[in-house]
Image 1 (cartoon, rainbow, N blue to C red):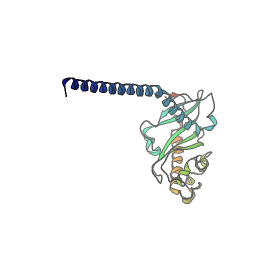
Image 2: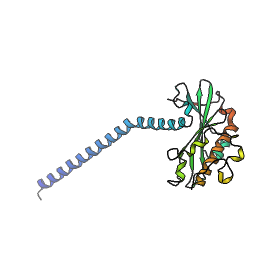
Image 3: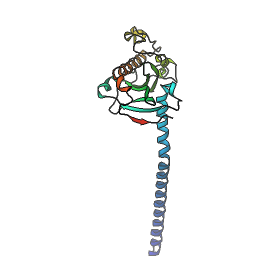
Image 4: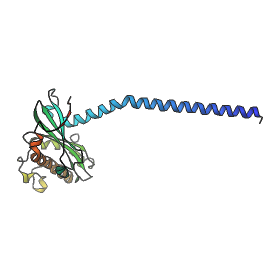
Length: 223
């Protein structure tokens, strides 16, 4: 090959490399721009979804326009009972200077398929306003019926408290308690009953602080 031919091939190769570099840089810039443009909407969507989960367990206030949410940290001494990690929050529903209800996170390690994560809405009188299972690994068609989307079993906790049923009746019927277990999913049912009871125990023990509107809290607006 002549020198001219070799130079021509070299120039063509350089041009092709240059084109590829430009294409790669353009693609990277476009991806970066898309990420920047969608970052805020995605974060907002996640926040709204999380807030919807919270308000689902306090349905009396879910659509109220005169309430707000704030939160307090779960004290270290209660974390083991609730299954909470460092940084876990108790959300409070407020109207003016009054705390109307709290939303307690609780995680049971004793599900059939692994941990069951839920939240419990509890009013200022210690009565359950709602329970929502947020995450679990229970058996499809059996244990997954702890989800509200799969059955109404979870609704049986609404209106209950530490005195209704009596403390020794906070168990599934198979264990001598007041709560029906899901057929074929006694372990899943037992785990949820125990953890709801622990959420109520926590509220009872930390009630004064939770209902103190002056307790140091961080604001979080409700829709």
